[in-house]
Image 1 (cartoon, rainbow, N blue to C red):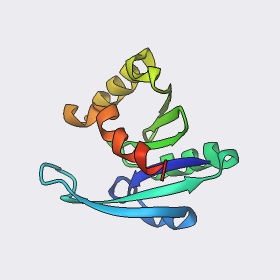
Image 2: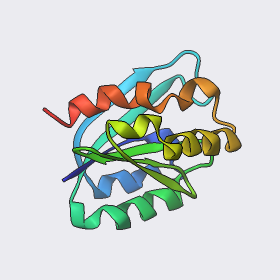
Image 3: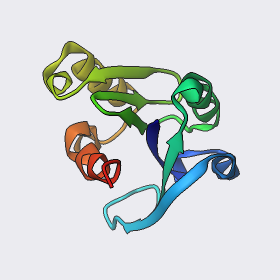
Length: 130
């Protein structure tokens, strides 16, 4: 089983999220956000056999300048609209792949504060263990 966390604001057509099993939906308030002050974060469960197809479908709907996380156990995908990065955890946080993901995020003009993927992923990792 894979898990995913996807902000509905990151998608051209957020109704695509209705196709997937939702474990939880949270609303967060981010006053510093230039996109939206309120973010609807969908925590999804995805069958392992479907992960590549689901990532491809989500990528087609993603706006540039956003990313989502898909993970299971010690494997994390950082997914952008046109590329994804695969990290083995916990060692992946210091890998060349992690640095490439950050650089790619910069090329998509994602503010530096949001490129600390480890910081932004940690709360969701705990959700997958519930």
